[in-house]
Length: 253
Picture 1 (cartoon, rainbow, N blue to C red):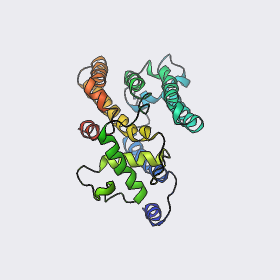
Picture 2 (picture 1 turned 45 degrees about the horizontal axis):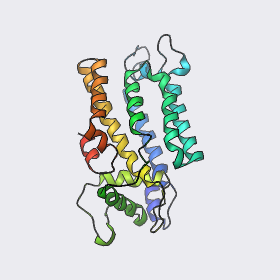
Picture 3 (picture 1 turned 90 degrees about the vertical axis):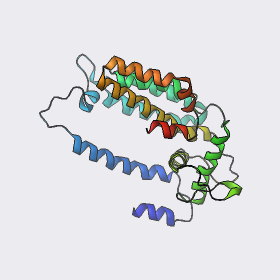
Picture 4 (picture 1 turned 90 degrees about the horizontal axis):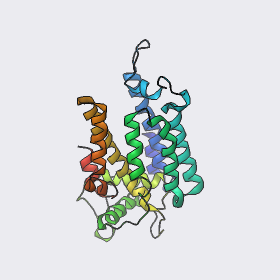
């Protein structure tokens, strides 16, 4: 909280400040969940998170998610920093390829890789063509430019209260974290990636939730097919590639 007050009190703009704040927040949340949900030392968990992270029988320990997921994140981070936005679609594909050896033995991870391969590479490859993408994107940009995360503002029409604030918080956090130039008249490049990335994450959350629910109720195969069916429904696929309010509403249900 003290850091947040210092950020707001500072008259200038701190580069990637939301990302700096999100890292310790998610770190604390992860530590609490790990501490509360950790199984006893003598418990043999095969179907939960410990079984997911560790190598399965006959699998090389270096192909387990505990190694491939950090490696995929490292590929994405290094590739984004060195190659920039124009090559990020190839960086995304390379990250998914790193996950593939682990996904072969884990249906949930395989579903994530397959759907991400369809969703992620071209997510920012075209402009903000829907009028509401530019509208909500401008409101999110104003959050960063004005340093006001409570009172939304829309260009010449002053206050903007017609939509819930979650979508604007997500898009503003993404823009600031990815280093989009949000200052007035800055003509930011590749804002499409930053605006649409939260909606991709929400859509993947919905797909994986359907997989988990159907898997628990019926079977792993049924869960995989249900998640794949949801991800390939044309309207759902379409909304997963637009920075508008539909996916935040649908996926969180």
